[in-house]
Image (cartoon, rainbow, N blue to C red; front, side, top):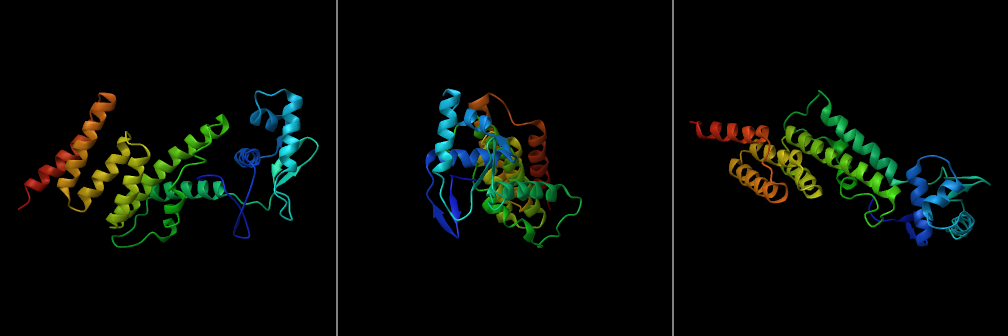
Amino acid sequence: MGNFDLRCAGESVAVTPAGQRLLSLLALSHRTVTREYVADKLWPDAAATKAAGSLRSTLWRLPKLGHPLVVATAGTLHVADEVETDLDATEHLLNRTIKHAESPARHMPGEAPPDLEPADQALSCDLLPEAWDDWVVVERERLHQMRLHALESLACVHRSAGHFGRALDAALRAVAGEPLRESAHREVIETYLAEGNTGEAMRHFEELRRLLRAELELEPSPALHRLLTDAVTAKRTEP
């Protein structure tokens, strides 16, 4: 997650650009793959023999750290079992965050959800944002959508627990990740309403309305409009 980084014993290790792509592809594959598959993915425009040679060279140039980064046979490759990736941990955390918010059990106001605290770091960046290989782009979009859902879920959990600052932070990060995503804006508006800031909720709704009109020539959904209208009506009828 974020830009490529290889660490050993807490220290960053230099890896050639080709080596970075190789390790990234193997990590994203989550399985043992053939040498032909890897060579074709990394050097799609090269002849098969030249791509195979480039793969052999890249493998040879990987850092020597006392234990292999890649287990290589005559025909297959996979990331060594000793190598840990933040990708697996992040995906697990994203799923757990979403599942937690969908659980029928809810936090009582003032109660912290400590098991979700590590999500803040995991939800702060996308997968290899500077890489544009097809096999990265597809996986990045999948994880990006999971990240947005998890941020919205995190906002919901924090709001239910009465932690409005944390809820607003998560919701606004979801908005920043996808400015035209109405469900993210809804989390912002619901958080403002939950903490009694109806004026802020109205202001944010109008910002969303201007954005959707300018970018898509659309209006916010009737459901979101009704949510705000009901809240404003209730506020005005308070004694």
